[in-house]
Image (tube, rainbow, N blue to C red):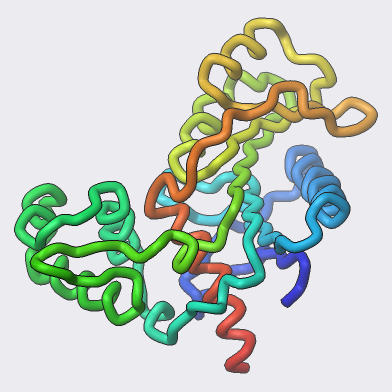
Length: 244
C-alpha cells in the first residue's frame, strides 16, 4: 500500500469519476499545492496514508482537490460485499449513523424513499457488515470498524478575487473536516479574513511559498454520506488492485 495515491483519472470499476483537467494558471497553482501538501504529509505522518482526489465529481460540483488521510488498517474489516454498495446505500448509512436505533417504519417515513429501495439497501448494508438488526432496531457498527479516514481537506483555488470562491469553499464543509480556499495573492484583504473566519473556512496564500493565512475550523467526520464515499473509493481502489 503506497504512502500516497493520486486519483487523477476516472475509475469506473470503483465508481469514481472526475472532470477533465483544464490547463492554465489556476491548475498550475493547484498542481503546485498538491506537490507542497504531499511533501508536507510525508514528513509529518508516519502511520497514515494519503489519497489525493483531483477534481472529483460529487453532488455539488467538482472541488479542485480533496486530500483524505486514512489509516492503513482500512482493509482489515473489508468484505467483498462492500464493493456492491452504491450512493443510495451510503446515504442510508449516513442517516442511520446520525439517527441511531431506528426501526424500518421510521426510516422510510423520515427519508421519504421508496420502501422497496430502503429494504434492499438495509440488506446490502447488513451483508457488508455495516449495520446489525436487534430487537426491532437497526444499529450502525462502531465507526472505527467501518470508517478509516481521519481527515478530509477540500481545497478550492482562485487566482485573484478570493471572495468569489468563498461560497464553494463553505459548501465543501458538508463532507470535509477542513475546507480551504487557495489563492496566489500573498496577503488577503481584511474583509476576506473576517468572512472566512466567520464561516470556519481556511485560506492558503502563495507568495514565495504557500502560507496558511487562516486556519480552517475542524468539523467532525463522517459529516455526510460523501465522507463515506471517499472512504469507500479508497478501499475499493486497493481491493481492485489486489484482484488484478
